[in-house]
Amino acid sequence: MRRLWGRLTSVNVQKAVWGLDEAGLAHERIDAGGAFGVVSDPAYRALNPNGLVPTLEEDGFVLWESNAILRYLAMTGPALALPEDPRVHAEVDQWLDWQATSFTPAMRDAFWQLYRSPEPDRALIAESLRKTESHAAILDAHLADRDYAVGDRFGIADIALGCAAHRWLNLPAERIERPALRRWYARISARPGAANALGEPIG
Image 1 (cartoon, rainbow, N blue to C red):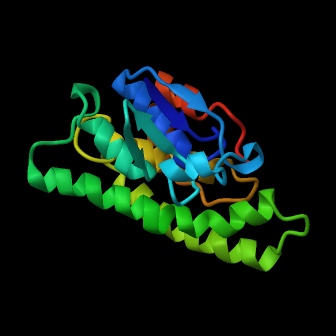
Image 2 (tube, rainbow, N blue to C red):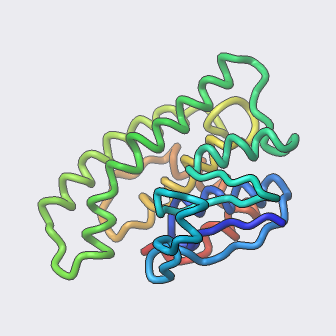
């Protein structure tokens, strides 16, 4: 039995759902977090003491943190296998960490103000968009001469960055056009796993 706890409107849950689909691993997804609650229940906290989503539960094995889940999925079979070259493998880790510590956090205030606040703070939104634009420029430059985030095949770095890019490109705000980022996003978002993970409206 394989369960994934978390709502599909969570960018981190989206990463796990996309990864599971790409790995060809059947699973039951259970809505949790946000309006669904659950994450404060003692039974859930026994699985994930942080009270966050996603949480992967698999035959008694429990794993939380979305990028840790992606790394685990990459070890389960060839579909998402990590590169054998240690330097290329390190590049995958680099982009996973950058997504989690730079790109997604930069847009957090804009997202929360636009979707969660009854009286959005326009100054906070503007500053968040400014910060995110600088990261979008980095990703766009990186993708200028490549089809995938790392190496010559789709992998977990594309999933992590793709979910963040999905949120960024769908925020109701003006953005500087990034042609390489758009081209890459169009390619990876056409995959069946992306349709399952990114099908819900952001918000």
